[in-house]
Length: 452
Image (cartoon, rainbow, N blue to C red; front, top):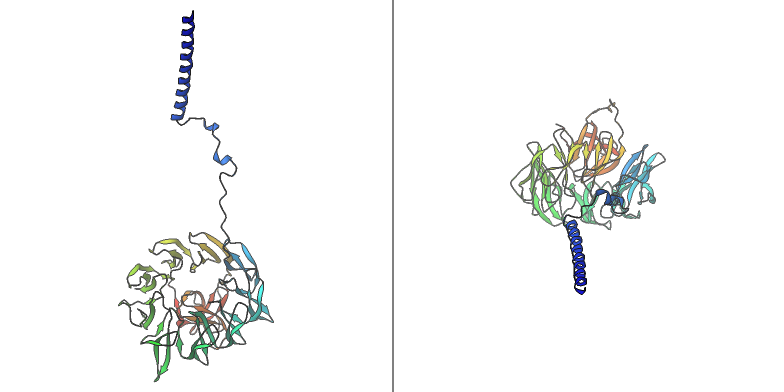
């Protein structure tokens, strides 16, 4: 009897152990096969709140761009949203300090003042014209003369100049009594006005010219007015990467080093200043880019180009459309725009037919405002023709004037390399449009952009 009970207990234990083995085997099989569960039993991640966040919106970087609505100007942010309602008769770019010149109409005249990023006047409109801030100071026209103010509207240099350039390297070119000199940020002459020609200082150097024995003599000088070299040139750009483009003949440009000597043998039909270690040059009617040794980094193949900024350069194809290339010469943004500005802080202004817009480095486009259409058959002014197209400023600083005369009021000043729209011509002058400005510039300081 005891023996039978013992056998029963053993059999029960065998059954228990066998059952445990079977269960373990089933569990192992399920785990080994990945636990095949019917899809309907697995909750979708997207069904769990908070598991898939919404794509983040483009951040507002506090970058403002002028736009026009119903004939008035305001500012939109980099997101394309209105930041300052359109309420001004003109609007200039904001400085890094968060201030901009804007204009209103008083007694039938356009006058400029300074606004902050909320659109509030911080300096009441007083000036008949103004330039953008450079190194914390801006040239303004008051009582038909130019001076310099800070962002609080305080004159650091009284309005006594007939022309005034931007500050660069702590100095600004000014013309007084028909001669050019340089003032510092206190408004005092550091280099007296004695020259017939002067470029902006860059990398501590500038070109000047004066009449000696009946002819113009050109010199490369330091910001302490020490003569580095006497040079034989007709026009000069500004230094970049220790090199500067100079024109030595009608269509002959070379690059000089900081000693005033020709840096390499290559010559070009046209040349621009170095930016980001590359310079735009024209050869055989096409534009490309050279490195600091004078070798082509991007072969000439474009109808026109701008300088590199933020790693990209605007380039125009054979159809007259603008896009952007990278440092290898490949299209980063395909050519599709009528005009294209330089990149700054990741954005560039572009235009389509009848529309001004904004793009980022990925080519994402936002419309800013509708451009005003030109009349289909505009009546030319007396002595003028109906020239049209685009051009590029080839002077360190070029004045836009209200009429085709050097005696006419100055509307604004343009920097070297600025692209403008040409809407007509009158004798030796082009009628141009740039941003909110319209007026006349001398033809000799504009390079026509090819539309072939």
